[in-house]
Length: 396
Image 1 (tube, rainbow, N blue to C red):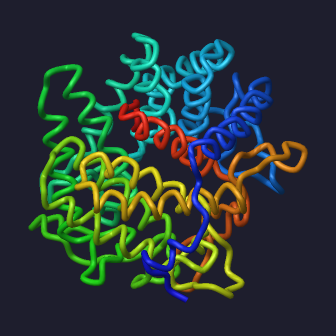
Image 2 (cartoon, rainbow, N blue to C red; image 1 turned 135 degrees about the vertical axis):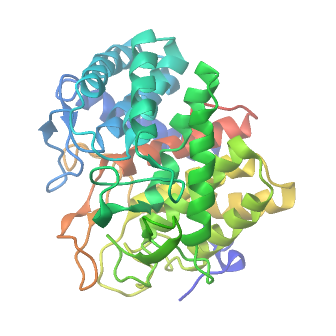
Image 3 (cartoon, rainbow, N blue to C red; image 1 turned 90 degrees about the vertical axis):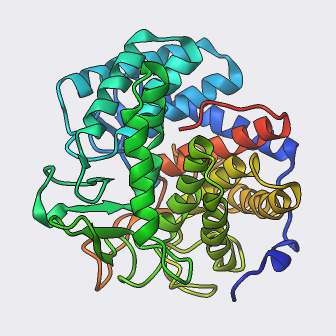
């Protein structure tokens, strides 16, 4: 049964004390994980509830380092700072030697690890690494179409496309312009979201996961899914990337049209939640389905609402914040891990990838923790607390 903003008002809310308790529970798990995951990183998703130790590879390792910085920000405990700084060195080596970086996810990797380190502690090695990452992301900018190519070798015909996830990678370019005084990074970011909003948002306010661009004309051609249930469906995490990504671009651009875009994408997300407010991995599925959930999508959407609420008129902000407080309560009650003997992750019931007839995925991390879910589940109550105190923080 589809939700409305009115029906959601019947659900419990997470208050300030609840947010603090959720953070405290998460921090306990982070602290317990430091011995195993300081010189190594957590795998992208858990296996039977437990992360494996990996090298600094894939697109997800920045989330674990970001979790450590969130724990440091919340507690001031130097153990977290020392562990995160060890990992900053690993990220410096990774970008310097171009280890597994032939993609667009420099923001996910380096904003949460190195930009956060620089903002919180003034770490110059972190700044250097993040600027190298911004340069690398900028190298993926395609003038024909004015977008950042997501995957594959730059200019490769079969990969001449963007994906909605990239909206979360744009802030590292805005940051690079701020610290260097060179506006070309920010211009690329602005051009990318303009192109994205022309083609990724559908008339019904759902979103394509990925959209191809004509190499000759630079015009958008057709949208498909990569991880959703079908080409015309709304992949839940993709819709959440839209919620947060549009809010982040509004932070930098202050373009009034993005308020309307945010409302459209967020309305679709909220109004397609199932009865318990924990989204299925794709919005094709609703209450009563046997399909797996993706708790990370709700956590990402909450973070986007907290970001955008700072810029909305009070009545409109309240509408979306009321929904976010209820999603946070549902996440804490149904998905927040409170027992490290059962899982060393923080947010349960996520889905990395689920196969279907129209996507190219194999099942991976189904009904497991994943590192981005953990990160955004921790970021949400931190942002909630700062919003309540009328403060800002080092978000993406």
